[in-house]
Image (spheres, rainbow over the protein chains, first blue to last red):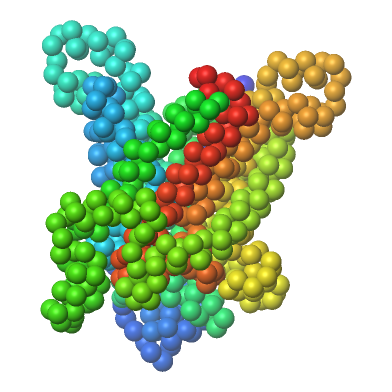
Amino acid sequence: MKRIMNRREGRANAPMLAGAAVTATFILAAVFAPWIAPCSPLDQDLYGGLAGPGGDHLLGQDRLGRDILSRIIFGARISLTVGFVTVGISVLLGTLLGTTAGFFGGRVDEVIMRTCDVFLAFPGILLAIAVMAVLGPSFVNVVVALSLMGWTGFARLARGQTLSLREREFVMAAVALGASPARIILRHIIPNLAAPLTVEATFAVAAAVVGEAGLSFLGLGAQPPTPSWGAMLAEGRQFLLIAPSLTIWPGLAIMLTVMGINFLGDGLRDAMDPKSKSRGE
Amino acid sequence: MRAYIVKRMLGAVPVAWGVVTLVFFIIHLTPGDPAQIMLGESASAADVAQLHRQLGLDKPILVQYVSFLTGVVTFDLGSSIYTNKSVAASIFAVYPATLSLALCSMALAIAVAIPLGAVAAARKDTAVDRGAMFASLLGVSAPSFCAGPLLILIFAVELGWFPASGRAGAESLVLPSITLGTAMAAILSRLTRSTLIETLGEDYVTAARARGASGRLVLFKHALANALLPVVTVAGLQLGGLLAGAVITETIFAWPGLGRLTVEAINARDYPLAQGCVLSISLSYLLVNIIVDILYAAIDPRIRYG
């Protein structure tokens, strides 16, 4: 019986493990990029421009003869750094504002949540596009633009959880013992938000990776010659007829990364909230 | 019902005001002089001063803000600094193209998602279910700027079935609609599956089965009809999101809509036009959400009394 259970659990966890493996691979590629990339992502070889896969260049060369594989490996640095930093800032900002709104209620809650509604009224990456259009393209500005977009989800989640947690006995006991609101929020409420925030953050990293690539695709994110998957796709589009590999490889890198992170997020959600699995979500 | 509609519309006013205010301040409170940024570093002081006057940037910020708010209410969003055309007229001219693309994407997404989700729910935990959900996860993970060029490569370049870009006839709608609707189809199929699984566990479904109704009848007549309400609602809400998604899709397919106009305005640093485009997409999104909420309340009375 135990063997059957383990096999079942193993099968259920297979997508999560696959997602974790893919995500870990891209993270390792990003961290060790200078050591594993076959050459520098900026080295040009104009005679080899638009060459197909083969020889020293496993995935081919771009318009300026740069090695596509090396640019994809270094591109993982940009994508994942933006993803993790953006989500870090969004979690921090969203959690602080959401818990404050939920804990204090009343006007504080009204102001924070109406502000949240205003930011949510900008669909997709529209707000980030508007911010980037004004601030101009740079790594910091991409993070700022995507964080402005990302905090709302965490604020709503944290507020909802805080509304329920503040009625729990351990929080009431802390209030009765005279703990300050800041201490209650930081020491008693936020630690209990870890599980739902982790799941939400996982999906948010995937969204931020897509957001960064989207901005770079539109020419608002990473600028040449920085290797960015979105910018590589935009460049590849111009040579779709003669060098499709310029489009296919960065596209696959984005899809694999996002899919890996989403699988991981799905698995984490099932593990932390088994009811969601039985509901079929 | 009338009271609910009034309440819902009044509730949207502060959000709409917040959106207009945020768009105004994104442009006006950012570092640097917008006129200088629009004209570039090499512009002469006289040209910058002229643009200041043209855009009203020489007036106090509060006066500019009130004038902007008045302009939004009266559909007077100024003129494009390059084409000199009215911003509102430029937006209205391309709006039908974006709306047709968004509606077509939504129809396509619904047509794919509901059968896929229903089959997955009916065969829960089988290979069919896992395959359908893997396909939907693939759809969520394929951003439009990845899927679009790949679709062009396969269906326009290799097979030659559809045009790769532009807006000429119904066939030019196919690839952009698939690109824009893929993520929506993926979300809706997952939602259809989860709501249908929940509905299939309801007492009235068990009762229908006990009366001897066939599996297909139970699934389509009893369960699916009830499970579709949240799916249709989310589909409606996603329509607003499709308007924003069109920014990238229209750029890929050179589709002459609001999204492409937004990107062109941003690249040309035409702030009045870019500001108008961002505002019109956001306010359209807000309006679609209100309409969907009202329709949902009309279909399901529990919402208005909830």
